[in-house]
Length: 210
Image 1 (cartoon, one colour):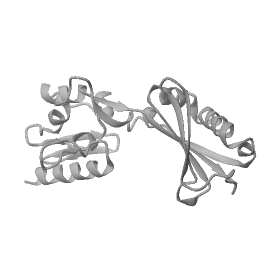
Image 2 (cartoon, one colour):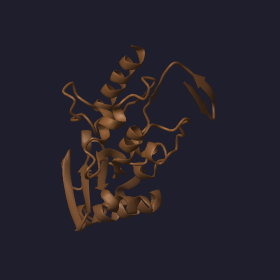
Image 3 (cartoon, one colour):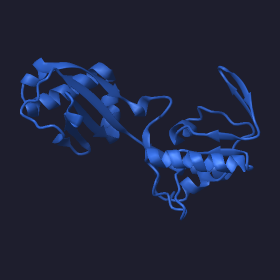
Image 4 (cartoon, one colour):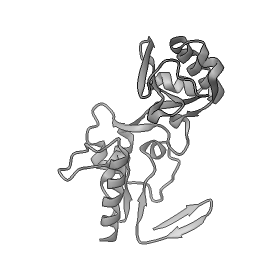
């Protein structure tokens, strides 16, 4: 196996690829010779979800809300905010949004997304939220070139896609991550979890070392 990167070249008897299914689908990594049809079919059959988190910091104010409480707001079909208020008793509120609505919010950029989240939160917690706001950050996985989304899912009619991607190529090239996280019974119940990604990496490492 020979891998060429911007930082130089690597060689070995096998390789474990742990990038997301989204990065593979975007063809950010090129394979020569091309991947076999079954592997390509597996990649094409897995989509990436969009869950975005927006962290809002507040200067010691809680607005009468207890730690680890939640506020929900539905704006329309497929558009909603879930505010996790002061998790771990810290002065932060984390907004969760998903789907195409999340992709649209990400397109606003970090400052635009923060302004929108603060507006929605202040509408429920009170105007004092604006005065106490100290800053925030946007976690935009759907726009991250190293992720291209989050939480892989098999597309309709593609239930076998995870197994196709998990199959080693010539017993030398292994794909491992949450998209290929299979249990001992062959099911993929651990997919879409960090723990599943860790277990898939361990399984690929054992197979590569065999």
